[in-house]
Length: 213
Picture 1: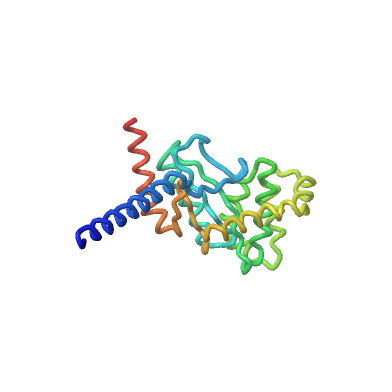
Picture 2: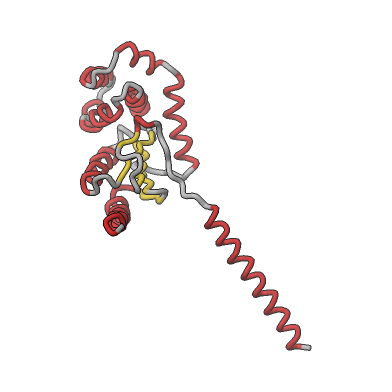
């Protein structure tokens, strides 16, 4: 009798384990990693690149300026391997960050997102400390040869601010708690240290795979 009960228990336990393993495998098969997307003007690099590096960033954040420089270095180190995707994440405690994000978004709609992106980060210490950064923003827009009327209309359009806020909402839904936060093919990398260690290691692996194919 005892051996029969034990056999039944073992059989039941084995069945539960099989169900559990099967559920995990099914979940893995159905699970798709979170890979942030953006309009084409906020993307840079080959559309068929095997690596997508998404960056949640704030134009008034010092670490984000360093992150922008690091992403350029990565593109240079791994030519043709990476597509960079920019996601707006202006922090509420950075006085001019959302205004800068709207400016860059409007520049993007004239095909000049990366031009203004670079100017905002390169001159971050100037405009971010200004009581009114509009003098700097006007200069950046002029240097990027943006159409003034189109720019003014875009900056006044609530839909532009809504696009920035949509990125913020998306960041909150995916637990982005600091900037810069990167997602490399869906893998979260928080800050430059993880990008330069885990991120570069993954890109090296992808580069080797591409070279061997």
